[in-house]
Image (cartoon, one colour):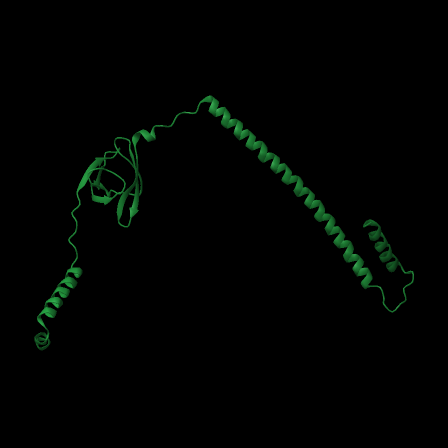
Length: 197
């Protein structure tokens, strides 16, 4: 290596040393950032720690338990002042996804009798509409059942006719049948022909 080193111009040696220093700097992990936490009590008295000076969306949150500090659970946490934090998980961290002020939670107004009556009227109208549709569907279903039974009867008649035709001898000239079985088949054909008119 010294032989190669001696052969290289001085400017190139300096440049190579800079490149090696840059590569080593990239491989060296950056020192961990020291996070500062502020505290806020939850409604149940548990202490909540969060990054930054103000609790806001994006703040990392930790719950202080007797066993130690743990990431806050996913879901809603209620602060002592009544504010609600919506917590989301991002990998191993818990972060604030939304902050609902305490005033927002108390804006519900009880329903007035007029509003209740309006809701009842809407529900009654909806119920009547659903019942009418059910009756219409039931009627249509009965019509389809009747039509299906008629088609089944016609199919059965058709099978009987085809069977009767299949049993007619082909070597005998077509004359009026004289035996009882052939007479029945002919009457069946005449009956079906008159029914379909």
